[in-house]
Image 1: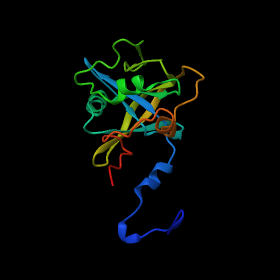
Image 2 (image 1 turned 180 degrees about the vertical axis):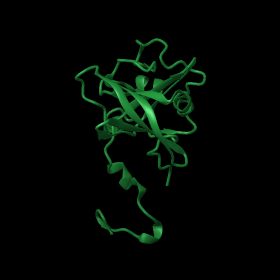
Image 3 (image 1 turned 60 degrees about the vertical axis):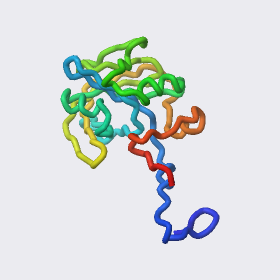
Image 4 (image 1 turned 120 degrees about the vertical axis):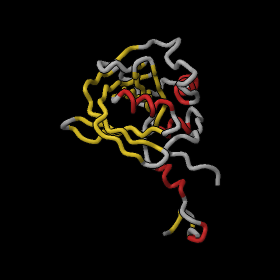
Length: 182
């Protein structure tokens, strides 16, 4: 394998930063199981099939939201737009739902399945029933069948690249794309 600008020394291991070339978006995944509410920012949401419409989300097992989705059996997936600032990202990404109400002080709506979401800084929202889970070590993959979908704005969806280059956001240790310090 040849690295850009020269040969890569195989003795030093793979260059995991190659994974930064994958393009993904920024999403808020949320769920309600009775009085228990969880919400967090993820960068791993993906449409899997079109008939039936299925999506997947990947959530760190250390996030309270993962536990709430497990209990609820459904989730809301909101596509974050470029109108979001770091305060918005921080609200959903850098605090735990265990002791912080992430929907306090923002407009809060509910999907047909009862999961909370905010239309602020959102391109669309999907209401999904969990139909399959896969344990992948540190994270759980939830496959959801879309039961309802709504376009909330025509604003440009935020990519993870935009989050890093324009907002100067960092990759938190619980993110599926976290690589750590070399």
